[in-house]
Length: 240
Image (tube, rainbow, N blue to C red):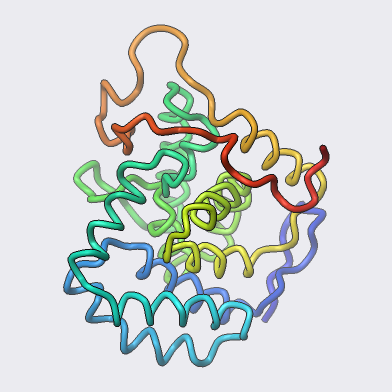
């Protein structure tokens, strides 16, 4: 069954619901930290990926092969360097929209409310924030795909910038985000402009008072201030 997007000009999604769920489940696992448990799932993921359309199968296969055949300790170091110390590779969707501002806290509550409405309760003790891409993808794959799609599409510019940043960095994990983006409708004109603006300017910053991560350190996933958005390539279709 193909899902029709509600109130969106982009129309229907490019894959069936089952294909999107399977793609998102695989990508969710692959975006996670490569500990022994995660790496132990690779054989099962290989079987699932083999049944997916080529547009998502190829990038996911590459990533699985990289993780299965690489030096584990180096892979783990690369993961930390990519996602924990590179701001433009933040896997947190609200970071791209709101940066280190108080509005991000409100946006995180909206993610929690979406999960709660579907019967999923996230506690403050959970390892990841509710806007972590892997969390959103798992929610969509296993609980409520339509609700998860709404969250992803509301933060589409951030997902696209994450894809561009990972590709620009030559990161193996770019393939997971490439696969996720292949399950989404093509960017419309407004979305292309939003991506171009985010690439050019970066996320907002807090001007006064306490930054939100001084209240909750998890809101500042990247202590290294390495942000240089102008290094990113311009998104395809963006207006000059």
